[in-house]
Amino acid sequence: MSRAIVEECSDSDPDMVPDPDEDDIDDFLDSDIIRRMPPTTSTGSQQQLPLRPHPQTQHQHQHQHHQPPTQLAPDRSAFNSYQCLYPVYFDSLRTRTQGRRVPSSLASPSPLAREIATACSQLRLPTVLEPDKTHPKDWANPGRVKVCLKAPPLGSQQQHGIRNKHHLYILVAKHLLENPTTEDSPGLRARLGGQVQPPEGTAYPRPAVPRGWKISEFVPYVSPAMTGG
Image (cartoon, rainbow, N blue to C red; front, side):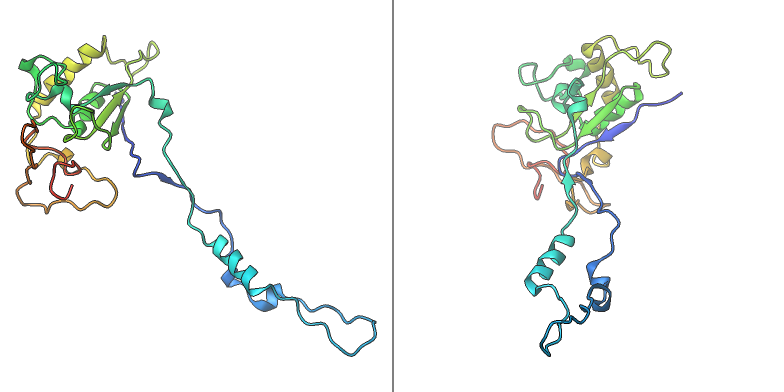
């Protein structure tokens, strides 16, 4: 039975477009690109000099040739119709008015976007993880998951049986309760670019909590609440 694939999408990690295969201008010899003009029948004893490119023009051409490849931002328009899920929806520290969307009996401490994505993938839903996105009410716990709840064609092996988004919330909440976040959870060490991570084998650092804020004990290291995050 096939399983949905989690696709990770990030603004900070665009696709690189390679340069087309071309010869480097530095590999050419002068003898390959310079030709002497044949002698003319005009009067005078001066000989035609070889035609060489102007040094400034040649430098500009080399500079243009060695420019880095163009970087294209990922196209997220294909996911505009997907349902969004944030960790705050399942956070036991939050009330309904603070963003929680499941009953308190199903809420979890320190929910992580990566584990939410794992739950959706196991439900055979097309899943996209966006580790750089943040809910307006939960700045300290970054990460967003987008899933497609549109019913697949009849007979497809991707039948998921999810009735609506509220049904999805309940199923994801149960998965999070069965897979609680610990300091060894892989979702804590999600990387964005070349960010430095805390050393392996050491206690995972706790976030700096401003007075009056509710922040989970464990948040991804990319969180602005983390020292150096």
